[in-house]
Image 1: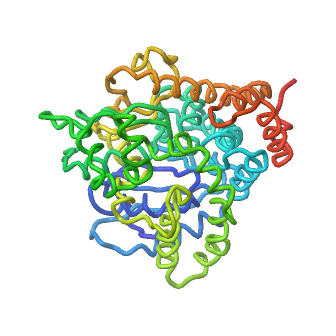
Image 2 (image 1 turned 180 degrees about the vertical axis):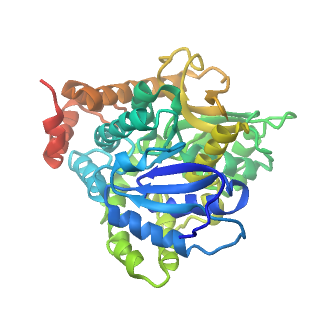
Length: 456
């Protein structure tokens, strides 16, 4: 790695063997974020993955002449966290095999098999939250002034659980909402100019709606929703189609496909030869050994990245349709995370859609609930911007899913099996208490540690 240190802060990446870590590092080494971080520490439950990713970072093409952040790999949390200014957390508890079980157990019970939505998302949270609570506890002990920027999924639930330990020093991010706004604004011919002042987006993580795109002169969203040609030019417009969008009068987050087209999604996923997790496992089966041995690990990683991105949310597309560059636009979670980090470290104000405490934003939901809304970030943290009232449809779905999320957090933190069963039974995508019981039993059999975590 480059020996010349930068002049900025120390960033610790928990989940540092993650596939998208090179995107974070590349953004730190060039462009507007260069110099923000001088040291990057990679920590992963599989240290060999972190070392393979470190090779990719070393091989990244240099497009700037300035110093690049130093990189080191640590094997233990207590060695990685001291001295941290910011912690990025992108942990996949249980690995890809855990994701496959989340999907397959749900499908066996006749339910949607998706990693963050429905039964699979609850199972994933029951593993992710305890792991991330250990990270938060260690941060409070050895790096109490550090900020935690969380993109461990399910991001809303994990962030809400961690806020009990870290308070406002944890901020959750996801790129799907910001990507939606970017694509919709481009399709509407509107220049956001780095502000969300005219953007009305409301919801929870992976469950939200864009309701206004106002440039100060007019709201461009109604015209966009009424124009099938422009709707066909970007991902969400094609996913939902002009008829549903006309009825809603809003543009849903892509994950609402699983709610508005539940039967179609279940049929498509159930008929597929492989789940999304199995596709990723097969794509990456030998990837990390290849990264560790390749002469040009960056070229190997870049080819795998393009293949992986093209298959995202494939069940929502027809035939051989592929995602184009416009669909992939929006910055990605690494850009959102880096903008948050820059605002926290420098006080340079940023407006972003984030997972933050509700406070008074939506009086119908608990003040300590985490919601996903446009927020202002500065050196004091992230603060939600005022939002217009929710419609009954939006409130009903958000309240139902928030109740599920809070029961899931209780189950994960306190070992409360009844709370887990209540979460599954209450989810809008789980249509039977008997199915909820079957899928919970299935997850207990698939993950013995889950059964062992319940407290009598």
